[in-house]
Length: 121
Picture 1: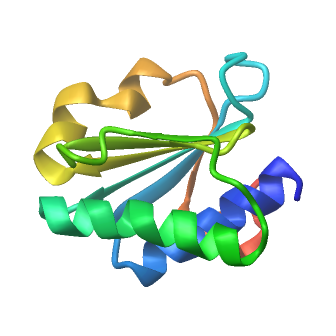
Picture 2: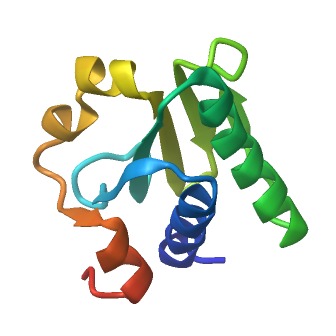
């Protein structure tokens, strides 16, 4: 699965788990870390874990392996590495503190609706 298709699928999974404020940052040409960052948040630790678990299980059903999950036990900022896509799942309080959107402000940013409708470039 291409990175663009994967980030669309991950966005849908996050939405199914009621993630809030889902955005996608196109990191191509900005960073060598990943093609895309998906950033979202949950209102409590259990929801943050449920979103990460949903990504692992949802992609597992499609035979896509999650490379690594970091921060699951603390559930304040979970990072899900899918090779070309890195998903950052924040506890609502942590997201504003780390503010990745500002840190990587040079990257084109798209809303959930733009990503899942295919309107992003």
